[in-house]
Every structure is written in structure tokens, then in C-alpha cells.
Length: 200
Image (cartoon, rainbow, N blue to C red; front, side, top):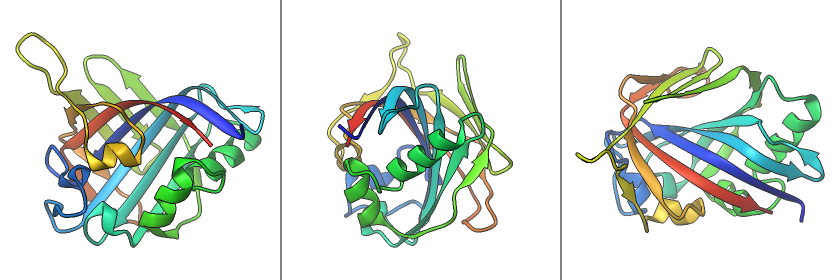
């Protein structure tokens, strides 16, 4: 097996909760266009024998319409704490060059890849999740809960199938901002949290 990983996937975007794109290609993003970032926090994994446990990578992209319609422009932000070999391996997997789900998914929705950047990626856990990606993005993720404190979760959406996520928790990302001069600048309030097991 070329690569495998167990990870937490934290997605946040420019829409209000919940982003319509999760429901499939017939829906319309809140602003007509969609911009998103996804943090991959890897618990354990190997890529061609390289241990990537504890590494982080962030994918950010913009689309002129629904995510499933494609024509996206994207960049990967690679963990400054990772070594050169780990960063090369992570870039290859998450850009779809190592097979698995990312090969078909990124090939379908991303038309233009910007050069990857190496940046500090910080994820702080507590009552909320705080994420910072160099000078480009900051997110505060607060899961939705019912009166008993149980997380609001969803199953069976089209985007979950695309990312091979069995269940996702819904969250607010109010106040989240993304600003990369080569990508659309945005603020948003939609977020989802996933636990995933992938291989390719």
C-alpha cells in the first residue's frame, strides 16, 4: 500500500452553516461562489514508508460556483514543523499524485494549482477549535450541540461520500477569515469536523 493515514479533517468555508455544496451539485453556494479551507490533522500515517503522524496540511481553494462543478483554483499549505521529505510526500498525496480518493476528487474539482507554501500551522483544542495558517488564515470552530451537549452530526451527503467520511459534526466558524493574495479573500460561518481513514 503506497500510503495510509488516520486523520481529523476540519473544513470551513465562505457560506453560512451548513454549506449547500455538501448536498450535491444541484445546490447553490450562499454567495454564488464558494471558497473553502480544509485542515488535515494527521494522527498516524505513512506515505511510501515516510512517517507523517503528527503532521498537518491545509488545502484552500475557490470555485466560481458549486464545488462539484469544478474549475477551482487551489493551494496547499505544508506544515513548517515537518521535514522536507514529509512535506514532499504530503504535497503529493493531497494534490492527488499518489492515487486514492484525492486523485479522482482533485482531478475533478481543481483546474489550477498554485505553488505550495510552507507555513506554521497551529491547531488548538478546547471548547472551540482554533486554527491558524501562517499569515493567511485564522479560524475558530465551535461545534453545534443540543441541550444535552450532544454534537449535531449529519450522514449521507454527497460531499461526505467524495471525502469518504462516514459522519460529520456541524459547527460554526463565525469570524473565520482567509486572505491569500492569489486566492479570493473571504469570511465565513460554515464548518464541519470529520474523522477519516484513507489509503491509496
